[in-house]
Length: 305
Image (cartoon, rainbow, N blue to C red):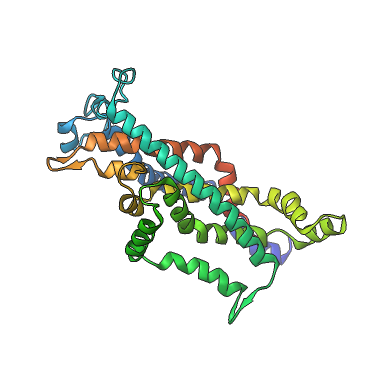
C-alpha cells in the first residue's frame, strides 16, 4: 500500500456502526418531515368523520379516540345514505367543482401554450426593447409576482364590469392565465436552455422549418417540464380564492369560495369544511401521484447540465 493510500484509508473505510447511525439519522429526519407535511391532510380527512364534541376535544385517532361518523359528508349529500337521493348542497358542490376544473385546466393549458412560446423565443432569439434585453424581459415577467393581488382588485373589478366578464368562467380563465404565466415562462425557460441548440440545427439541415424543429424535436424533449408547469399552474389556480370571491357571485364560484362559506354566525362547521376540503384536494393528489415522474423530471431538468 502506498503512502497516499494509507493516508486516505481512514476516511474511506467506515465502520458498520457509523453507517447504521447515519442511515437512522437520515431516515428519521425524512420520516419526521413527512409527518409534518402529511399531518394537516390527515387531520382534515379525520375531521370530516368527526362530530362537534370530537372536534372540540381534539380527538385524532379513529376507532381509538372517537367513532367515525358520516356527519360531514352527509351535510354535502356525499355520504353512503344520501348519495342516491336528491341534494341541493351536493348539486351546488358539483357545480363549483366543475367550475374549478374548467377554470384551472383552461387557464393552465392557455398559460402552457403562451408561456412555452415566450420561453422558447427568449432562449433561442435575441430581443431588445429599449434598454431591456432577454434577461431583463425574463425578470420583468417574474417581477409580476411581487405585486400584491389586492392592488389589482379595483382595476380588475372595474375592467371586468365594463367588459361584462364578472361572474364568468372565461373571466377567471383569463385572469388565472395572467397569474401563472410568469411561473410557466421561467420553468420552460430552464427546460429549453437545457436542450442543446445543435439538435435544432441538425433538424434545420435535414429540411425542417423552425416551427417543424420546435414541434418535432424540442417539444417532445421538453414534455416533462411542460407537465410539471401544468401541474403547478393547476394547483395555483385551483387554490386561488381572492379573485374568485371578488369577481364571481353565483355562476362561476369555485371550490375555495365554497369552503370559506362554511363559516357562519353560529361558528365554523368544521366537519363540513373538512369534508369539502378533502373532496377538493383529492383530484390534485391523484393527479400528482399519476404524473409524479413527469413532475420530478420537469422540476429537476436544467439543474445539472
